[in-house]
Length: 106
Image 1 (cartoon, rainbow, N blue to C red):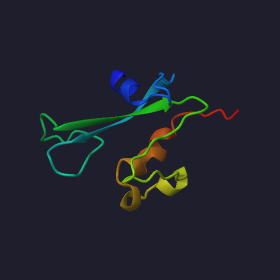
Image 2 (image 1 turned 135 degrees about the vertical axis):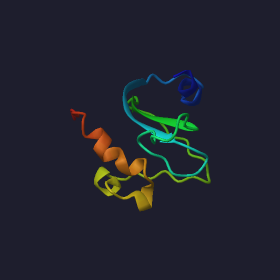
Image 3 (image 1 turned 90 degrees about the vertical axis):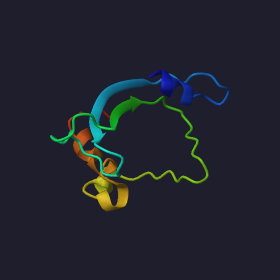
């Protein structure tokens, strides 16, 4: 959480108040190759990478700073669903992972 606090700052350097609510999912990379799995394969004793996805609550007003060589895309969940060719295996499973939460729109 401290790592996130250093990277999420306001314009003047002040800390933005946000909260890590829930763990959405775990992904493991068994070796140094690109495929990631939502489970540890049975023949792997120590995976090389463990990626955790968290549900993070942001304030009402926040600004995203994206490097010039990256592109920020706002995609609806129905476009992410079962589209691993376009968005990758981790992001394409977000609709299934988020379906266990109840959202209140106010």
